[in-house]
Image (tube, rainbow, N blue to C red; front, side, top):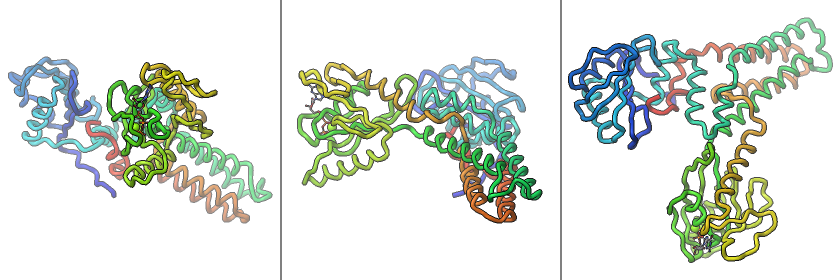
Length: 412
Ligand SMILES: Nc1nc2c(ncn2[C@@H]2O[C@H](COP(=O)(O)OP(=O)(O)OP(=O)(O)O)[C@@H](O)[C@H]2O)c(=O)[nH]1
Ligand SMILES: [Mg+2]
């Protein structure tokens, strides 16, 4: 569904820090009424100076530091105020309510970035890049996102490569055997970028790490040991876990979804059987399988559990005891190393999701062009390709709110 672009002349506000309790929370305002609304929250408001930190006392309680960025020298290009206050949820929700009562509007997702783009403070690609960095799951991902040069010049190069193909076709030279070196270079360059786009998409999803094995092998106990607290029920009764349980973990700069599943066995218990079905479904999507039974799957890390009971670890398995903690941190290291390897082996270029759609279209067009016999038809496809790139590069951000910014978080 296309979400219509929000209006731009009012003043918006949002909590810029994650919801919940923390030592500091930041509330951000943008628009012409930012400073007036902020003053209304403060006891004895001082006269504010742009880019100066002002320590104030809030009517709602507690001290706050207020920073005013005067238009156009701000993130959004409008008057922006940042209020740093005590990170109490009670206090922040009170301030947000007061701001709404003074007539300001709560910001929609990505609306600050949207305004920044509309007001020329950053390009659309910079906004997408910023959002991708914020949502990255690994340090490596951030590195790739930040070190990738802008895509726009690359697309312009592709356009000139395409124009070269057209020139070749017109001159009817070098276009023998139904192909030309220029067309092949163009096709392979587009293919390379599209592959990088697919790898970007894969890397941008939270990797899924699954604990897998028969009932009672110790999956839930290991899940708790990896989390560091008791989250899943553990018992000597086989078939304890039915619904899968998941938690997001970050280890050594890599985040992943760890999922504890129902032990797999054939069972007449219909509820347990549903749990086993879910395990099998998750198994298909898993990036890493921590397997309590020897597995040949390339995603598997095979372990021998309960080593404290004196069992000899099977060859090629990682010995783990959730009881003593033996091997647990080595397992975590192995998981993150494997994730880094599997996700980033061939990935070196960050491609925004919006560009992947274009690149896959271009891939389709070059495939068609390569399969044509008549130079006239090849020409037609290549002209189409040039046109698509041109219109993509010229797409005004005003039309892209629903497609891009609405997927950002609120407060960004
Ligand atoms: N000695 C020892 N016992 C363990 C260890 N890990 C799990 N156990 C015991 O093994 C039993 C089963 O553990 P769970 O973690 O519930 O096993 P599960 O694989 O989640 O079982 P289901 O949920 O039924 O599939 C419990 O009695 C645990 O205390 C371990 O590392 N050492
Ligand atoms: Mg369990």
